[in-house]
Amino acid sequence: MTAAPTRIRFDHANLLDPRAGCIRENVCVLVEGDTVREVSAQGQAPAADQVIDARGFTLAPGWIDCHVHVIASSYNFAQTARSTNLFAALRAMPIMKGMLMRGFTTVRDAGGADGSFDTAVAEGMMVGPRIFASGKALSQTGGHGDGRGRTDVIEPCACSSKVGVLARVVDGTDAVRLAVREEILRGASQIKIMASGGVSSPSDPIHFLGYSREEITTIVEEASNSDTYVLAHAYTGKAIARAVECGVRSIEHGNLVTPEAAQIMASHGAFAVPTVITYEALASEGAALGLPAESVAKIETARAGAMRSLEIFREAGVTMAFGSDLLGESHRLQAEEFRLRAEVLGNLEAIRAATIHAAALLRREGILGEIVPGARADILLIDGNPLTDINCLLGQGERLRLIMQGGRVVKPLH
Picture 1: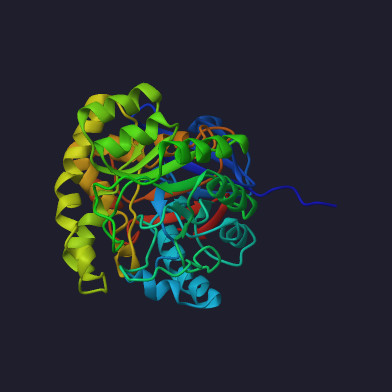
Picture 2: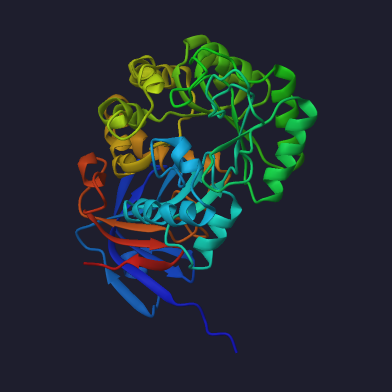
């Protein structure tokens, strides 16, 4: 006989409602199993097996980071790629746990992790956020995902199998169609492509375009056949507009977006996932932590446009989801993205990016990113009100007094 789900009730909660943009005072929230069953006025509190007094704290939904790389344990991608599969997975474990302890109960891995990582979390083998994995990102030869240097003979790239590799090199419409099918087979929830040059790759200037229109359209079609979508690494307005016109749904970074490209995104309903904090981290500590010299030289171009891009996206009406894109030791800076966004967009929009906007991008509206009946019970108890003080979200979760993920308390009240 199966035992009834545990019922946990939060009493006297100041509930953060990101959709309404306010704090609802003196609310009762009932969790049954892994689901929020009831949100009611305190006087209507239903029976529960355990009662948690939330008085004086803010009750918030778990955060969602839509651009992470859980296997990126080093700034030196070549070093990570050379790791054995076992070591690459083991090195991901403290990275994932750190994300969860900062309140990120859900992440979208934007290249590297496959579906087995989410399964490992769900089965309790790893402690970390639930993961919407993209599998290996797809890159053309010489693109942002091609880690080979400029040599006289370019050897075949054996980059599609090892756990420690973020991307695979694949060219041509038939090959990219097969690659999408393979990543879906391995558990990818969505498909990542490299649509422009990047900072951390050796041979592609930022303004280079990645993939032909025909290749991108093929990738989008094949993803759509599996009822999913494509996200694209893209910096410049030209790369962004081109990708969106080919059907890409989510633009990653977008530092050098133009107003015209942002308008194209808005008209197509595409999302932006800026990752401002990673450029601050790259500039301040990338070289010291192993980022190659050719990549260090590219940082300032991307960094200079990052904050301005937030304004351009906002002015065009593009929905922005939260992303961090940190590497190696810099993963500890993940929550600083809240602070940088709040400087330009205000606290509420920074919070919406990590809740309802991120949930919409993941196509999990009403399930993730808010505390409503029927939602997954991802709940944070915060010492402070982030609508008025974004600092209570920063650091390593020191002001998160309790963390619940899927109805399970992973950080008890203290």
